[in-house]
Amino acid sequence: MLIGVDKQGRSVMLEVNNLKVEFLSNGKSIAPVDGVSFTVGANETVGLLGESGCGKSVTALSILRLFPLASKARLSGEVRYDGHDLLTLDDAGMRAVRGKQIAMIFQEPMTSLNPLHKIGAQLGEMLRMHTTLVRREIDYMVIAMLQRVGLSRAEQLVNEYPHSLSGGMRQRVMIAMALLCDPGVLICDEPTTALDVTIQAQILDLMRQLKQEQGTSILMITHDLGVVAEMCERVVVMYAGQVVEQSSVHELFDAPAHPYTRALMRARPALDAKPGQPLNAIPGSVPLPGTAGAGCRFAARCTKADDLCRSKMPELAAVTPGHLVRCWHPN
Ligand SMILES: Nc1ncnc2c1ncn2[C@@H]1O[C@H](COP(=O)(O)OP(=O)(O)OP(=O)(O)O)[C@@H](O)[C@H]1O
Ligand SMILES: [Mg+2]
Image (tube, rainbow, N blue to C red; front, side):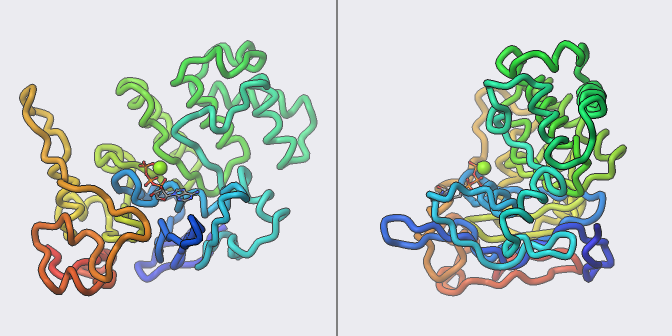
C-alpha cells in the first residue's frame, strides 16, 4: 500500500502534510500541533522525538482521529495513507483504517484493554471486526499471535482478564492486538516508558524482531534518545508543536544541527556519570500552546538566540539532502 516516492527516492507508506490541530479552550483557539509534516517509509521506523508537551501524542491521535468529540479538535492539512486523505474520510472509512491498516500502541496498555473482558475475547474482536474469519480460525490466530509476542501459556491467557497480568505482559498483549490484522503502519506512543529497564529492553527487542518478520512501518514516539538510537532509521524532532529538525538517525547523532536537538543530547545521562552528578537539563520549559511569539519558539531557551531569532520564525530548510532544520543559526 505504498502511496508514492519522496524526493530521496524512498517508498512512502504514510504522509503527514502540514498537519494543524486546534482546540477551542475558553473561547480561544490553541494549536498544540502547528504545521507538522513528515513521512514514514516502507519497512521504516521513524522516531518522533521531543520533550513532554511538545505535541507528539496529539500528532499521533490526529493520524487516527482519535479525539473525543467533546474536545472539539479541529484538524487541517493532510494525512495520506493508501490513496486516501484520512482527515476527510467518513466515519465508516476511518473505522476500517483503525486497527486494520494503522494500529496504535499506547504507553498505558489499559488505554486499549478493557478490564471487563477476557484477553481472548478482546483480541478476537479485532479479527471479527476486520476479517471474515470464522470462530475456530480466530481462536487459532489469537493464540498463535500471543505465542509470537513471547507469551507462554497462551491457551490459558485467553481466558484471563487484563488485571491478572503484569505490566510487561499487558504490553505484549497490546502489541499482539496491534499486529493481529497485519497493519501497514504501527504507531507506538511511548510504548515502554512505564516499564522497568529490563522489560523495556525485552519489549524493544520484540518490536524489532516483529518488524523484521512482518515488515511493518513504525512511527515510534519517544522522549528517549536511546530508544531512537536503538530502534529508528530516521527521526523527526518536535518542539512546541513544530518540526525543528528531521534527518537520518545516523546524521542526527553525528551532526545535530538544531540547538534544541543538541541540548537534548547533552541532557542525556552519561553511562559513566558519577552518583549525584547533575544532568545538563535544558533550562526553562516548552511554551504552552498559544503562548509563543512571532520568533523561533525555542529562542527563550536557546544560548544562540539573537534579535532575529526572537522576532522572526525560521523556516524548515535543508542543511544537507534529507536533513532539515528550522533555525537561523544551525550547526
Ligand atoms: N484535548 C486537548 N485540549 C486542549 N489541549 C490539549 C488537548 N490534548 C493535549 N493538549 C495540549 O497539547 C499540548 C501537547 O500535548 P501532547 O500530549 O501532544 O504532548 P506530548 O509531546 O505527547 O507530551 P508527553 O511526552 O508528556 O506525552 C499540551 O500542552 C497539552 O496540554
Ligand atoms: Mg504524549
